[in-house]
Image (tube, rainbow, N blue to C red; front, side):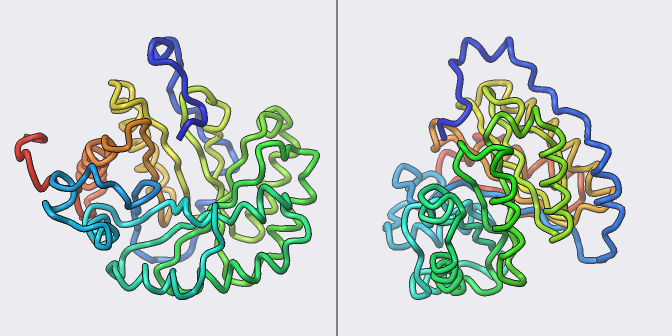
Length: 302
């Protein structure tokens, strides 16, 4: 993931501290009445990692079984492939059959909806997309809604109309990239109020070169975090530890579930950072999310 990347030599000058929670978060979390146990989902953007064979995937794993191997290490995925090609029911039904019941797919809206048509006149495309992802069944998590980066507050009505017209029961997490969303506080608050009304989530992106995207605003009992690391630079770990602190606070206030997606320039490093994340999450929250485990080179974490 290139978004927000900076040269390594610039990292020491960046303030990576998480901003305080906006005041609106407290009533959002306090309104949660469901007693469903807290759920923590984590993953990355794909399962096609041939370089993981013999380390994070068992030795000899064939490409046809990569998804099954991936699902033994992670319990969710930020599914990039649906951004580039319209999914089909046959395809998603096959994928869901290869993972356990506690796994969640979080597909991205296809680019024909978000980037080509920019959320306008998309009814037919949304219909086809919904039909395609229906194969995931109960293993479908929130859908990542990423409007074109050029869509700023001047497109608030377009984004709001799209959210309001989504099929009943469809859950999304909205990621905003246009810089004016984070300077035009009135428009940002208005859009967040619409998300709250429809019980839709925000997506918070933590990346070195765009600290404004770490807005910390929650609009539902679900949170989605996209964390962009820097090849296991020491700041990756201190940043993760800050997130663990904040997630613990949110859970105490009512957060029900979180989707935490890890990105690294060198994607082969993601499982190592994920191991640190889950080890700390399990310890701090008293839950039992399965840890990523090496199939070779034992002792890396010892």
